[in-house]
Amino acid sequence: MKNLQKMGGIAALYAGVAYLVGFALYIVVLNYSSDIAPIQQVASFVDNRSIWYTLNLLIYTLFGFFLVVLALALYERLKTSSPAIMQTATAIGLIWAGLIIASGMIFNVGIDRVVDLYGTAPDQAASVWVAIDSVRDGLGGGNEIVGGVWLLLVSWAALRAGELPRVLNYVGVAVAAAGILSAIPALSDLTDVFGLTQIVWFIWLGIVMLRTNTRQAA
Image 1: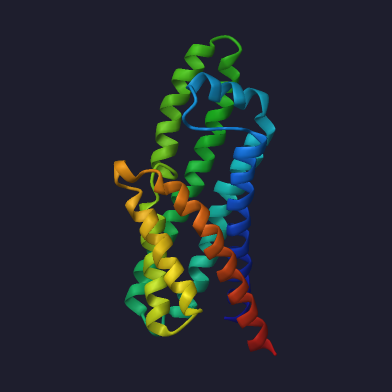
Image 2 (image 1 turned 30 degrees about the horizontal axis):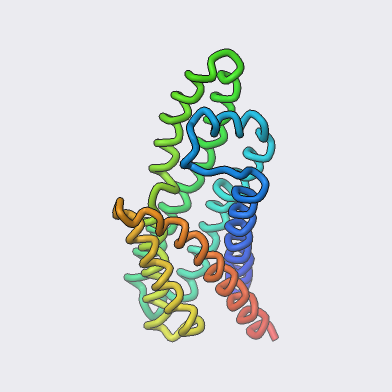
């Protein structure tokens, strides 16, 4: 139990840092936006292939595996007071992790395909990327309803159990609301709000879980 809580704390910190690094690389290093033309997106993949591969590995594939650990750690912590809520939350959290891992794998394989095609048929590479990106976006990125529902249930269970700082749980509810509402087309920009505010929630949660584990060990 103690080891799982420690692993969960580390996983939460990783998730927060991964989001932070991801946003920084997207904005500062890659200067990338989904609003630019597909052929420009593919050109960015060609120029920064290794950076893109590493970025997707960190913020999608590895993030998903760490999310599995965090979901299980939170289940162990909160299941006594809210068993039904946490069973549901954990199932949704594992589904979310699977979607994120699949999204990252599709992203990297898709980049390989369009980069190879770009040298001989750049317009075709752009068309292929539009199709690949639609699938990738639908799995993990176009909206954050799955992650939002998971976070809402976890925060609700923590509030009922009196676990975790109360303010942290209210922050979790607010972040979850942004994720769920991002499924509405007119509010799709809340996807970025969900990602940015989750940085705070993940890092705060990680610190709390590690500190609690340290006190229990002492």
